[in-house]
Structures are given as C-alpha cells and as structure tokens.
Length: 268
Image (cartoon, rainbow, N blue to C red; front, side, top):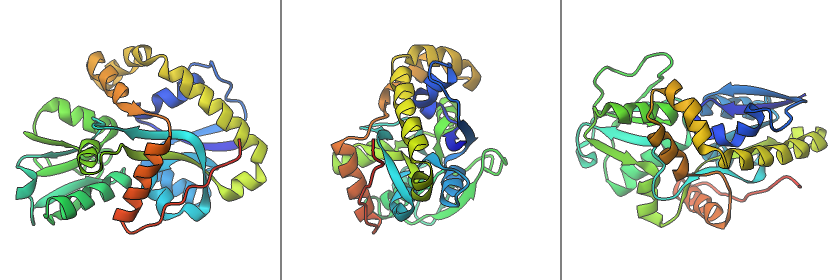
C-alpha cells in the first residue's frame, strides 16, 4: 500500500478530483489528509511515501526526495489564498506583532524575506493555529493560507491585503511555487513501480480536475461559505504544472533564502 499525503484545502482539489470522483482508480493507495506543515513532517520522517509538500521543505531537504514532474501549486501575479492581512500599511509594522499560521513553511519564509529585504521591517512574530483557535480576536496583522485566507478576506476586517504571489511577481517577474509533489527516495527505491503508476494516475486526475472547475466550485463553495464566482476565480489563478518558469522561480527563491535548489525527478 502506497501512503500518499493530501492537503485538505480547496487549492489541491483539482489535482485529486479524478480520484475523488472515482474517475481514476485509487486502489493500492492510502490517502492521508492534513495541513501542509504536517504533511511536510510526515514525509520527512518516513510516514508517507509520496506527498504534496511545501517548496521550502523540498529545497531544505532535497537529499531525501525526488520530485514528480509537471506538478506544483504555483501562481503568477496573484494566488488569492496566501495573504498577509494588516490593519496598517506594511511599512508601519516594524517591531509590531505579526501572527503567522503554523500550517505553512514556504509562505512563512517568503513573508519574512519580503518584510525584511523589500519593506525593511522586522516585526515580532507569533504563531497561531486556526484549528486550535489560537489567533487573537483582533490581530494587527496575520499571514493566512488556503481556505482560512479566503474566509478572512471575505470578512473584510483588514484594510490592507497583500497577496504574496503578487508581491513576488512584482519583485522578480516570475510565478511563485508554493508546493510540489515528491516521493521519498527510499520509498521510490522500494516501490518504484507503485510510485510511477500512482504518478501516472495523479496526472490523469489533475487533467480531469482542470476541466471541471465549475463543477468543483458548485460542490465546494457552499461547504466553505464562499461565493461560487470567487471560488472559480481563485482556481483560475492557480497553476498545477511545473515548467521552466516555475523551476527558475524556485532557484531564485532558494538563493534568496540562502539554500541550493537542484531538482531531481522520478523516472516516468
């Protein structure tokens, strides 16, 4: 049995939609759902064979992983679901309290880089979990991702909203890659045929999902309390492929956080 990590956010539903709808066979696969940071840990520690993981996790621990080709969660110009929301302009946050979700690694590192190097501010960082309800009632500024970001944006409590993909694009002219799909190297050595077979099915599932955004939003928007139009607009901002521009962006990001990025892929 291949153990596969699956994020519980709307932004990965298109990739898994073929499996969800039963159009693509999922026999021989056990899906494990959790937030991105926890899936990073589970794959890193060997509790999963394959998972979507943060690009930061891959860059930091690439010796453990092999990437699945042509798969990512990326966005050019805006992503909508990775937001820095503030009650004051960003340049007024020096030494002020900023709350960061525990659910993300990549977004946290990107935000810290932008605040420090682009805006020249160094806030006091605190961490929260929406699940554990540890976000203060009236935070001055907060980094939110996924469905939580969409819900906070809809509430319109924060007059200043910064889309981190847009901030990155303004800085580099490149899309930002938030997540990748990877297999553990040792799992790949032991279960090569299973990993390759699952990869083929995952591509088939993603291709199916990309053709059914309206159907996905019709089903998931009510569950999230979001307008269908917002849901469809959001999914249209996302890119689930991994091409030359995305790889170049990963290299730029890795240099900015003083890491080395040299992608290695499974055979297909």
